[in-house]
Length: 329
Image (tube, rainbow, N blue to C red; front, side, top):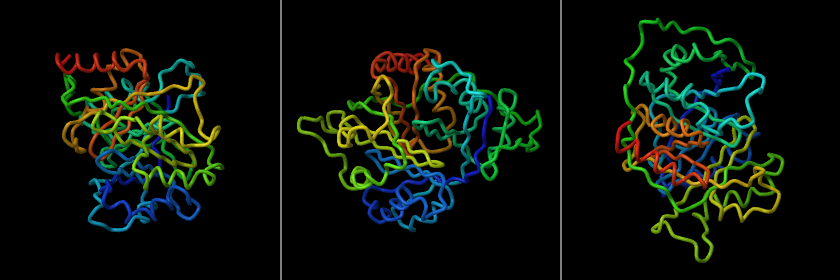
């Protein structure tokens, strides 16, 4: 297996809900007019608390300075696991589950904090640029490490981390943050970039203006229904995560769907904002799911983390995670 270190230098930022109008012009340009920018990596996720932006340094220039814009300290790099030759079994777990034990757990063992972005196409593991030497040292025994330079993959040179530079391993990873599961059901989908102009007005409304139009009789956030929407445009590929009600606003045959038309339920991690320094949060969730062979997408945001699991697995997932939470096993 190959681990690609992408060439994008990334910023992670939060835009307060009350300040989104100030940033809308730049965000629309990044999402819908990529040819007008040099941005190659852009992701926007709305939660009840705020908007989380992951964007490369070129794209970050499109955002105005504002008191409503908070930027995480440090520059981040994106890692991507690529199965050599595409020979993996078709039954291979989806999303973060397939990299939980080979990537997420070893990084947690070495006290390296990660920020996850699962998309329709793949999973991106974001690490701080300053942690890259330790990341490479930790994962070099399991993966062929390659750097992407000007779109081409080249061998990643050792960054001089000696075998003696190993942080102590964590013995246990009990779940220490509160878990909740909103009532919404979600779709993880995509669309052909060529069709983006035909739904641009609708997407802009969903992203910035509608605040989640609810159908009559739909539950409110007070009864467990939350606002969550994620749009990513990364190296020309579009990924969308939205609840089932929002998908109904789109014309037929625009959104990609899996053969099973699978719906996903969310596990939200965190009672208070999680911050960026704690290590092992993604591993606490993904390792039990990997052990149970339950596929999962994982999206970190500025304040909380979110795992998406198949609808039919949600009760067993919550049970397994809460067992891990209560016993510390």
